[in-house]
Image (cartoon, rainbow, N blue to C red; front, side):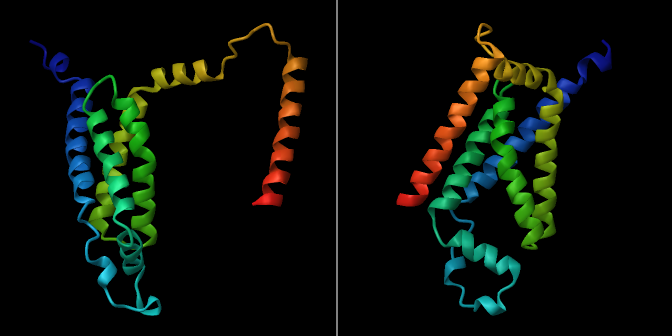
Amino acid sequence: MNLKKIFTLDILETALRIWTAFYIFVYGMSKSTQFDGSKSVDISIRDATESDMMWAFFGTTKEYPLIIGALQIIGAFLLLFRKTKLIGAVLLTPIFLNIILIDIFYKIHPGALRNAIIFQSVLILIFINQRKRIKEIFKIMTLSNDKTISFGISLIKFLISVILAFLMFLIFNKYM
């Protein structure tokens, strides 16, 4: 038996997806208690560090971390299966890009940043391995279904849409 045929990139990706999904699931589950007590810290804004400010923000409500945690759990579950891994990667990417930025700008523990970068790297690997499917999806999304509409009619529809959007903008700004 040829070892190269057994140990393929597909097996490595599957192992990385399962490993990543496990950790993301754990992090998602921990969101229910992660920021407990941070609201009760008695420190003035002037004396607070960037990290203190971030913890206070996320600890202000119970719902926001729970929503993020639920999305992480859903994304982790989707990563487990071959047919849904791309959807999971699409769902988790903005979450982890946000986590990476928060970790950098709010000076969160370097281990948390490292983990977020590793997990995002696995998601990028999925995107790279799924690039043909992604191209097909974009092709489907950008192709016009109605080939009979001429360029002139499309341009007129677009201009009418711009005028309507501008009118909606004016009305919105006047009454809101």
